[in-house]
Structures are given as structure tokens and as C-alpha cells.
Image (tube, rainbow, N blue to C red; front, side, top):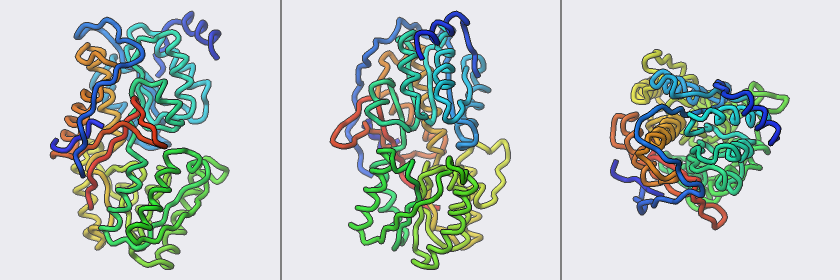
Length: 396
């Protein structure tokens, strides 16, 4: 890779310890530096028996974390322990995490698509297992909260992507940009800042910005209500602003129907919310992916490009060449594995993590990818454990 930026509780604890184990389920940037962790690494030796505990969102929030967990479980067997976690049940999240780290063989706890309550869970775990490596992918809580709790958190660089997505849209011919979200998401700092940057960049490059509010998929309307709104609103927007109207949504539940509606009504889609050939495209375009190709981004891209060509929509949608979720999921796991083996000796080693991202991305894409990995910056502050990553977009 050529351009890589190296940028509850005492009672609950006592109860779980008594129970014992729960096996519950582009410019190139300057190289990063190794950041010492606040907790020293335990004595380690290469190899040996160890476990890596994983908690991930269930398939209702997207299939890719579940698929990635299943692949790791199939490859590494008993080394991998963990489960999907229920949405909105913070006490269960805390108790599950405590149960996992109660096993002395667990050397790392990984939380994917980090939900509200994860920081409290990790704080509780550190009281009994300060030696464990704590990592997460995707940030739902305030950066100031999670940065001081986790050793490493990886998230697509949402804030700078506000600029890069708009510039890509401009290159694709965009004249109007429609941003779909809802108040709960706009209360999240990173998503709100990204929206503001999108709006500012639109003004800079001469694109009209439209801020549109959808039903919240976690409200009474549910996912169905959100999807129905998007399906009905996109054709209205295209009719009002023209075919060079680009669309973006902040929630996974919108993506399938957004792809479908954009293709059917002739708009533009410069990126899904978590860029990936698998997010929205295969379902929205009614592409059947064989089981043996379900995690092959190269195959998915080929099928998407062929279908878009049939529909005279080539060059009007874009994504990253690999699944962002599977990239950070697999890379974080590999980092944790090397830490448990003793190959990586610092809990927060940006250089080592960047090398791993490099290798994983190239292997997934089957080509040399450009990945930009940098410390997260927001409101004039640079975070040392929270890292954002971007990739070059692939126009389909």
C-alpha cells in the first residue's frame, strides 16, 4: 500500500466472579507514532492458549459484523468467544462483558459497532481485568468518554468524510445534495459535525444542500417507516431538483432502499453511510451473491458494475472497494491476536495497527488500496486512542 496515513458494579462483579466463566456467546500523511497505554501490557510470550472475546451488533443492524464474527469463529475455533448484544439493553451489555473477561484466558475484549453503554462496560471490566486489551469499532458515544476508556477505537473518519464525499459528488456531476437523518443521530457529535462540514463544502463548491428529516428507525415508525419515507421521498427530490441530485443517509436501515430508489429514479449516490460494496448495493440492486462469495468484495464490485451498466447508471454510484465494517473488524482482531501472542507489546500502537490495515485491505480488495489512518480530531482536540480511517472511493 502506497499512501497510508499513520494518523452495577461491585455486586455484579462479585456475582460473575463467583459464577466463573461465561462463554457468552489523497495526500499522504505523516507516519503515526506508538502511544503508550495507561495500563502496562501483561507479561506475554508468543503462542500459548488465549482467547479473544468479541461482542458485536446483531444482523438487524447490518450483516457484515455477524458475517465477520462467523468467519473468525470458523477459522480460529475456541480462540474466539463472545456473542451479539441486544440493542438498548445496557445492563445486559455490562454483565456480558464482565462475564467474558472473568475468564482468565481472555486477553482482549473487542466491541463492534460500539453502542451506548460500552464505556461503562469497559470501566467495569477494568476493575477486575486491567490487563485485558480493550478495543472497539465505530463510535456511538461521545469521543471524550470512549477515548479515555478504550485502548484503541477504530471508526470511519466521519468528520473529514463530510468534505471528501461532497467533493466526490461534485466530480460525479452533483448539483443538489440531500442529507437524510433524524434528531437522535444529529445529537451525536460526529454525525452532526459531518453534516455541518457537508453543508459548508457544498457552499464552497457550488452545490445546493438540502437537510431532510426521516422517521427514526428506533421510533414507533420502526425500520419500515424509515424505509418507506426514503422510497417515497427520493423520487420527489429528483423531480424537484433534477437527476443530478445526490443522496446520503446516516442510518444503515436506509441504505437498501436508497440504492433502489436512486437507481430507479436516476439520482446520484456518492457513498452509503458505512462505505462497502455489500451495504445497500446487492439488496437494492437485487443481486444474488453465492454463499462462497458472500465476503468477496471483488466479486461484489464486479456484479454491481455489471448491473449498473445494464441500467445505464454507470458512474453514478460510488463506494469503497472493501467493506469498511469487515476491514476494521478483521484488522482489530488481528491486532488483538498479535498482542495476545506478544508480537505487539504496546496496547496502543498506531504504527502496528496501520501495517495490519494495509495488509488486510490489500488482501480483501485484491489490489493496492489507499487507506488513511489518523488520530481523531474534533473541536480543536486530538484523541490518542480514537482513530479514524478513510479509503479512496471507487466510482461504480
